[in-house]
Image (tube, rainbow, N blue to C red; front, side, top):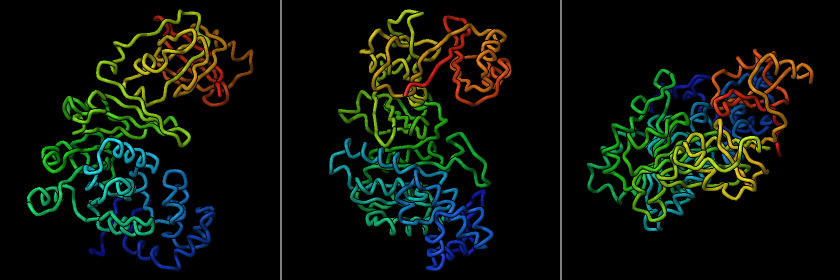
Length: 429
């Protein structure tokens, strides 16, 4: 192994000598002893940057990677930032378990191993997993971590995705057919810059797509949460399915499913929203004709009858299925509902709603001077400004109303029937 190898990072890169320190018994004992300490204060006491950084990263792992925390795995910062959460990785694996028959779950290849979080989850579904990691130091860390976690059916190989695919497709004796390829391209350039297009990501999935289709029956591609889902079918064809994954109201993943259109229970699925909330998982599927917001009914609630303002989970906004969700899953709301100003309004409190619900206490046309006077009368100096389809930014609205952002007061700024309107609301639940 090249002794000068480093993992490109920003704060700071993990180097060969750091890994040697962290693998030593003395360092692992220090990590165990001081795991609950403040890393900033600990830095002066230990004077061991590698151990201090390891403690800080393990503390971050508690919620995102609890198994890695419990096993005291080695967690470089950049690899941590780019990894899936265990909840999201487990969700993907369980979806594959339900979609694929046992004879279709023999071999999976993860072309972007990183910390090995997704490879480990795939190992719980597939008989064998090959995880490819381009950085030799990170590959060594992944092997070490998977050993600590007791994973025995994941093989970590050091090399590029391109080289692996070239060898696999050229070698007629490579072994069994790949049932699934999973790929999560890095959205960081070699110099640490964040990139946004698939062409700039590493590996370049669009360039690899022809060989990927030859190498595997099915492909799961993880894209940036910022990726425009409407681009998926243009780039990957009409058969591509899109899944948006949110964790506790935050969009975490956009997944593209290729090669699953021949499965009976996925043939009609065009968009899927998976909401992971409080440890539970809820899935919402939409066929192509249901997913277009423009064709969904806007409900029967008349203007002036609204008592609750409901904001669907970010996954529905990201997947362009807000109206489809309301039409398909909220049809039994007593008193009906209406979609307007990019929000849902109801007369009664909706049950089992996936998102946030607010009780409307007051509404007023957006006349900043009048609203500012109302806020002063109520001694409100801070407010959370929520916007949906509203031209002014939250900062501009706060300045116009004479308040600072934050606090316990919630205001929604919407355009209702062409008129800018502000709703005073209170959170329900």
